[in-house]
Length: 287
Image (cartoon, rainbow, N blue to C red; front, side):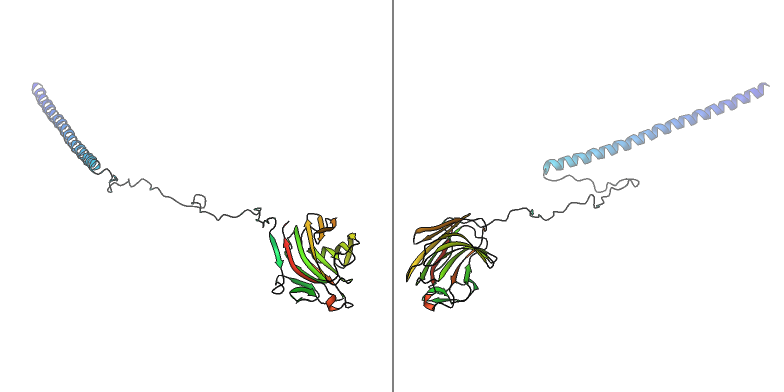
């Protein structure tokens, strides 16, 4: 029994000794690993500090340079890369054309008092602006006249939008029963006119083939072998006729507000050619 106990003690002692050696080796290995890791961390830290110092020096020397990230830096492989997708909802808006509002007022012509809208002295013939409506019109001794006809001869000029104006014209006649008309506000075969002869003067409204007298005077405006200067003033609803500077006949009417101007000669085949009135020095101005 004593020998067995001694052997057991020897075995236990050997085991303890071996275990102590193993533990010491493990501890020594652990400290060695820590020393190596600490050395590596120190080296890495030194490298980073050296890189930062280099970049700081470069920035101080050249402040205008821009510091950029290292090109060798990569994202982890499992990190999704950001993407940008354009769709109709987030696409940039393109500029569109500018449209003019439909209710923008269109500028209209403005007239100044005394402004000449039209004039023709017939010295070089009849202006091309005249529009012959009925009859035959021709020049004689630098004056305008119409050939005899069984219907009134009418010639027009001007703009359909004309509203207020003054008409001046000289009329030469032999004072027969032939009469002339100064037409104002002509619109679609309808108009207002001053009609005068040797024995009477009147304002009439003509609508197609219908005529209506709205004012009359038993006094003619044409003289025997003489010139009569006729002035017509059309201002709003007021119509005034002046002959040789005297007010002859006035009237008020709201039938027409705009229209062209014109001349009419009422001479039938019963008259001789030298009895047909002639017109000269025609002019239209702004009141």
